[in-house]
Length: 168
Image 1 (cartoon, rainbow, N blue to C red):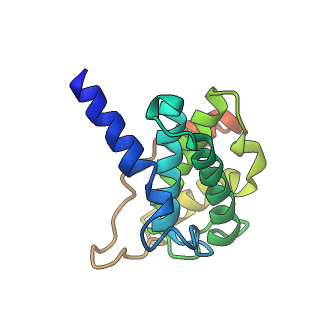
Image 2 (cartoon, rainbow, N blue to C red):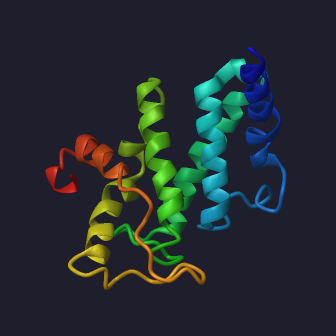
């Protein structure tokens, strides 16, 4: 019970508070800034998973704020073909959590971001075009060099929601 209480305290005081404090809070999406959006969406995931158990009356407002951040990031952070304006690697983090958040929303009978945000459908093809045949389209992320995105699990979701076996 103590571990659960500690976890809920962290969710309430840290994770769900993140969208309201710090340098990212005021601008939230900064017309396509990956870090702010990733923070917003992760808070939305926590709020959606824990709901009222998190002990915050504004948990649904955090979810709505995350939905807004997803929508605005895709509108201002990606072009219509799904390529990230910040560079190929910087779009990976917010898109990774955006697809997970979109799936969680669907599973909870809420907004269907897969239908509402056209760039979510375009982004997988953009990613494939950058990665294959030889990762030629990837640009370095900070000083880390050219790295593959950490996970492509979201392609399982796009294969399902858009009936595209090529995403597998």
